[in-house]
Image (cartoon, rainbow over all chains, first blue to last red; front, side):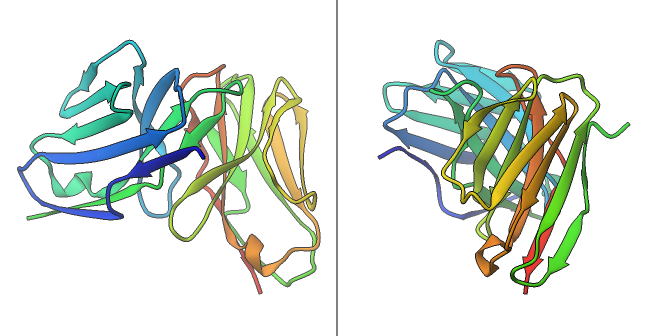
Length: 112
Length: 111
C-alpha cells in the first residue's frame, strides 16, 4: 500500500543547530514533492517544491533534497530559531491530476 | 487581502444536524480542494474541483457533498453529522498542479 512517513511525531532541537526532517515514501512515483509549514490554529503554508529530476533546492535557511532511489526527501533548517517551531508536512504529487498526498507531519520544537 | 477564506472558523453542533462550510478564494485559481485534518494533524484530501468540475472524490461518506457555484467558491455541506466528523476542515486552491494556498480552517465539533 502507499505510504508517506515522516520521522517521529516531534523533534526537539537547540537554537542555532540544524534541524533535519525526513520524509519517506513507498509505492509512489511522485512527479514532485512539496514541503509545508503549519502553525497552531492556522492552515499549512507552502515552503518549497522539488521535482523528481532535481537533487536539491535551497531557499534562505531551508534546504530540501530528493532521492528517488531511496524514496526519501530531507528537509533541513540551518541556524534554527525558536520561530521555526511548527509542524512541517511533506506532500507528494503524483497520479490523479493535482492530488496532493500528505505525510504524517513532524512537529519541530526549537528551544533556547 | 485574504487569499483563501473560510466561514465559519468554529462550528459546534449536535449529532444528526446538517451544516455547511463556505470557502472563497480571490487568487484567480482554477482548482479548489477540501481537506480534513484529524487530531494527529494528518491532512487528508476529500474533494477537488477544477473549473467547477469535480475531479477528485476520495472515499468520503456521501453525507458530504461539495458544491462549486463558480471558480472562486467551493462549499461543503454535511448531512446527519456524526461524532467522527469532528475535525478541522481546510479549503485550499491552486493554479493547476502548483503550490496550494490554504484557508485558516474550520474547526467542527460534533456533540
